[in-house]
Image (cartoon, rainbow over all chains, first blue to last red; front, side, top):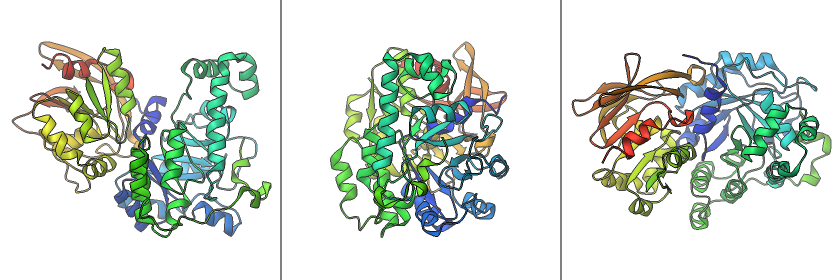
Length: 290
Length: 187
């Protein structure tokens, strides 16, 4: 019996496919998410839109708060550590969270290196804006990739950009010099060859960052996402429970516009959202970690 | 043609297995999709999520009806949904198999693992490498159920009539044995 194989880590990502992972800040929200059919919850003290507003250093959440959520829902519980902060990751592993998000939403702890994720038993998810970032994270041991999008913005434009970028860069490999690509991406050639052959990332590929409506979720699924993360979009709306139900339904039936319509029909206002032009370049979460 | 319930979970890996054993497949998302298939796979995923979506689309009753004539294979969350009882009101139990099952019985993801299981197919016994992902445990096998898979002495797969359920994931390791037992030999 083994417990640390990469397949076991990717196995959980496989189980999350076709689902919705929701940001929650307390037990009450976690229960709303589970009741709505979330496949997992991301436990964090402040959702990205509040981190953006509050400023200051954003760190791993209080373990006590994460534990309370673990004790009250039956679905997998994820939590975030800072980029490169392997000690936070160790604590989250000791707490037995089901997935660690090494996240650009938190303040970076290391500007040059991400966590070496191979020695951990717990799987990691990392954000990516392009194929190079995605493969560097996989090479470091990530079992799941998500688009970075722009967390807390309620604006889908960056997630679309990142998903399309990864998809088109995978396609381009067909006619590219793979050794040059491996050098450009700073990853082993075998990894690039594998992606070229399968025309797919070696791990599941989810969408995150700016999803606020059932239509946003459907859009990302149609663009090739295998599951969506919804952060501020649910609990910053006027009707979190209804919206959570609606987004779950829209992801399950994303190919059928009538179902997405029915799910969207009675919703109140979505979160307000921010234009990318109103976020100074140095305040964009997606620029963190390369 | 074999249907794969595709409301949530790792339905894609089951499509790959069906292709490997030359069986046509169809993603089942609506109750009318069941009219076109002669067998069904309920994949792994989150049993709470699948339960909600099954009930909301009235597929729960339709699957029960379908099960009277056609074989169903459930893996992990699928086994929970097929069971008689999983002692958790958040989860739907279709009662297709006379067994009790406990969700997440090995613990959280850090306790997930890969291992060999033994599969019994009539006179034949074979080993198979599988993944247990936040897996459930079969805690009671009723008189109407037969055991077809063990991990050491632990029961991990049971069948009743045409239906098969297993608590782990042979499909994630590319293993076709159980799919063949359920959909090829099971006529």
